[in-house]
Image (tube, rainbow, N blue to C red; front, side):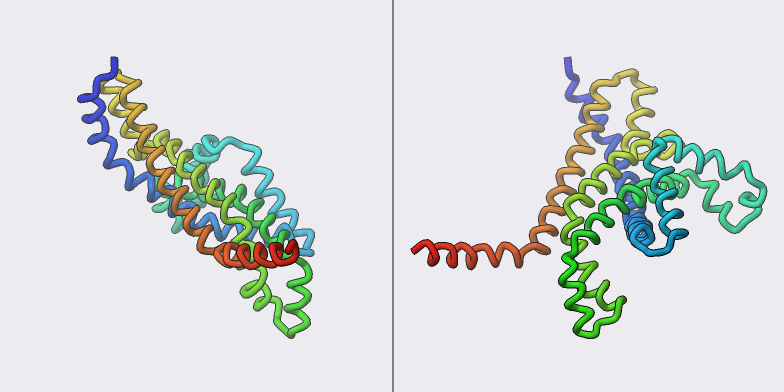
Length: 242
């Protein structure tokens, strides 16, 4: 039988883990966007070397579990003397930053395929029209390609951010006390698995619901010109039928 007073106690003990969960997800996804964009541009470049580097990065990250990537960064970096004696060691010895780096590299690889699809979806005619107007390549990317690619990629990238937020639960393996970490600690003290994980799962569900709604609102704002065109198209079709 479910013990609701205990679930309330579990909720109060797991709530402090939400800021850590959100920090991991948003910092990693924020930096991961730049990795994704850089990898996508490298994959679409004419340079064989750049394409090979980006393909190798995406292949390695997508072909290995995130948990192993976290272990390699957290336990593996300290095995090299030049890293332990470098300026990066104060950062890499902290589990918080190791988790951020692992999540960032992971979402950057998956996100690059979403961004790449968005870039390829831009109509070729619009790019050629921009060139005929005398726009430089940088200006074409800034004013034509990236805005259109972001609109196309946003729904899929929203799903990637949600997946990343759920993946933050793996950070508890390296002692970070986010939601899952606090839940594991509470279970080890009380041996009551069902109630604690029900509360933890509900918290993830609530956060992802809010996040998915935020992405939907942003998508609606970016695509409002499409919604504005629909009534006009409908009226034209109705006039044609009359």
